[in-house]
Length: 206
Image (tube, rainbow, N blue to C red; front, side, top):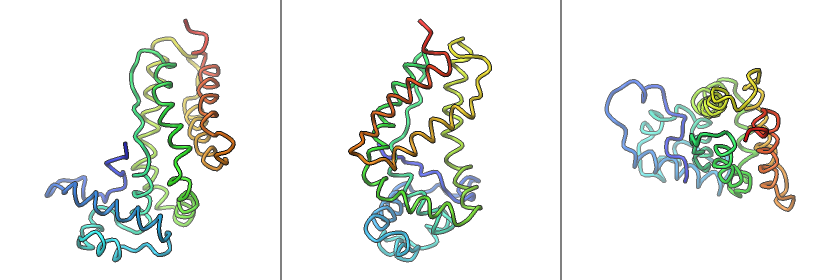
């Protein structure tokens, strides 16, 4: 299921005022995504998105304050949401997430847009800060909660560096999107899960 929140809203949308119309959000993001895929980042503009989506430019700027943030929100909308379930065991939690991770590393649209993603993030530290704070941090927090639950259950080692474990998961997923599909990158997700369970000590739990 594509992500619905998009994660990169203008701060004013979080501080009250008139509720946003979700149909406008969807029209903007859908249009921006289609333009990115068809024409590329250089030809994307707030003006063209507004015209094609049938909305005012101010409607876009109220949600995403710049072209880079709009583009990142459009890219994030291509991802499926991770479920982060609480099944009662770390192994089962990770197995529930695995199909979505496999989908992410094999999704052709995301692979097509990957160079654009890294280009945007390399150009502006402020954009990176906003992207991290408004999207990446929440995903990391969800992973941390999952591992913390496992630690509280006594499933994993108490001395785990959770930041590094989460980096390992995120980094492995990211690098698989650069691996040719002929190399079966989704298989690496299964290996990743087995490795995480081994490193954390959860694989020894009965």
